[in-house]
Image 1 (spheres, helix red, strand yellow):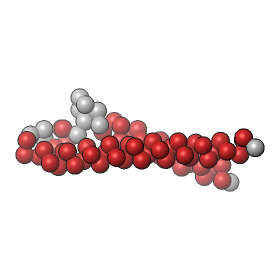
Image 2: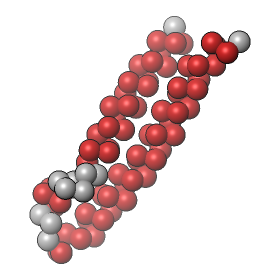
Image 3: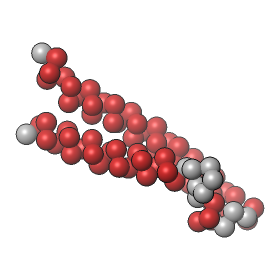
Length: 75
């Protein structure tokens, strides 16, 4: 039961992590969403900071979930 919950959480975190990374793409990124002009610089920068932080948190969470799922196999 716990194994299936951890697997489900890993899938959800993985999808969110991929989405965060794709939104940070330097070519497209979020610039088309915010127009790319200087007038939206603050909003764009705040969103990019949030995405970087979310990427770090999701990556750490994915590693922790993976280690938790591996733990019963080590016994």
